[in-house]
Amino acid sequence: MAYYRIEYFSNALHRTTSFEMLIPNDFREDIGQEAPKGPMRTLFLLHGYTGKAGNWVPEGLPQQYNFAIVMPTAENSFYLNGLSTGHAYQTMLGEELVDYVRKTFNLARSAEDTCIAGLSMGGFGALHTGLAYPDRFGRIGGLSSALIVHGIAGMKPGDSNPVANYEYYRECFGDLDALERSDNNPEVLVKKLKAAGAKLPGIYLCCGTEDFLLENNRAMHRFLAEEGVAHEYHEGPGRHDMAFWSEHIVKVVKWMFA
View 1 (cartoon, rainbow, N blue to C red):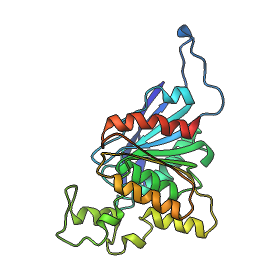
View 2: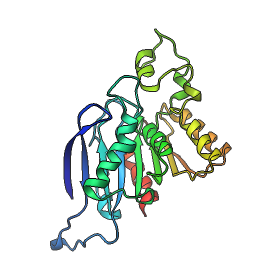
View 3: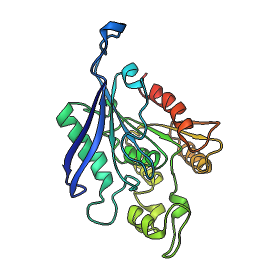
């Protein structure tokens, strides 16, 4: 499997940035491997808070299901367009990086061929980005997604929680008093797509039963059900850790690409 680390100038971030990419375009004849058949699809795979590109790679799955993986580094941005110059991570991921992959590798040409998934902060990013760009992403996978909008809405200067302070959340999410009504809330995007009669991407959410984000994920599941949005939701034994994510990314990928 070919591995790439690519640097390019990001106009969204006002600086040079990088992403990593895996493409299963080689095979071993000596052990009976066969060349992939059919068009190659693409998965944009998002890291969590404090993470970076390449933190987790689903071993063997790209070869089995014939898909490339694109892994951006988005710092602790929640994959949103922050308030300050050079922090337009939503634009970087949903527009700029997709266009770059299309132009350079002739991949991710349509929503049907392109999926997005992530863990924790990356799960939020996958859900939000997929809903913000339903013409670019056909399926969304969120593992232990950090669906924290309602928990941080209304925070005031001086407030903080064990993860970060008010200033950080305001930089990422904008006006916290208006957050629940803004496009940075995935629920708002769902309602806008429904009102426009647009097709929503397929959605798969999962979370461990010992995960501190379990109730957040259950709340999103209830919201989607109440809105009549078809989706997959699964719980299973596990915490907010790589053991759970390594097990369940197999199920997410099979749902996306099998």
